[in-house]
Image: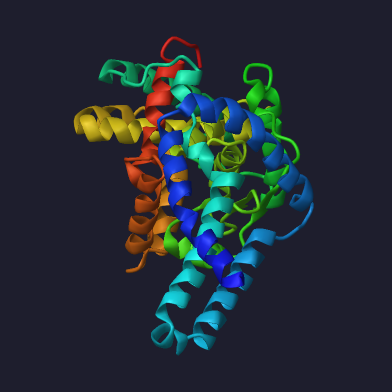
Length: 355
């Protein structure tokens, strides 16, 4: 009977996959009944249960799970050849359970309506629109930078600990609620990853644990990146799975924070993406616009660039290829490039607005 149950669980991979195919063609259903329905309660339950813990429970689960899997493989190494069929069923049934849990607890959000449709924004934009919004972001970023430093050549240093930044980040979401009620963020569950060192060498600044709904931030990244990274991971917690959408919401939450340092981090975050897109389209125009950016802002960008360059290693590209393929398998066909598509949301949102 037990063997038959495992076989049934293993075979459930097929209907689960068919369900994913159906949901991918019905984003309105996902939006209404999962992302704005069941998931809202799932997310809050996990955050109430685990948010109070000072450490990442999900990272602990990953560690114990990895040890268990390695131990199981070692103990059953001889069975692989002697009873291959049973071994395959055991592995497939475990994968089926994880596949189900991943999607139920968070993963179905990959198939919700694109954010630009919810906000009634266009999906495309012209170079003229891009340049116009970039100039607005430069003007705002320069003003905030000068207000903080009183010297356009000094980089901004945040006067907060990283734990203090975690506490202040939700304030931006509180200010967004009046315009975007679906962005209510309570309770808080964001923590430094227990795997910050390996995470850094893999080239990632944070992630959401889809099985525990804890937002994890690499505790080693420069403090300048902490506000926007924290807000980005919180956006994932609220059900925005697409990387460009989490970037955009993280940007909005940062610039709507009452704290000037958070505003600065937010505006310069958006500006960097816009400048990168201009560089891709027109290097001469990029050079011209770059000269209008305060040198202190460029030093903040350099600080981040040097941090990642210091931790470059031969295996990092393989992790990024793996994650890029993971994103492609979950309804983000551009893979790692999906992060940069935040520019389309930024340009169309601010094209007719005063920043």
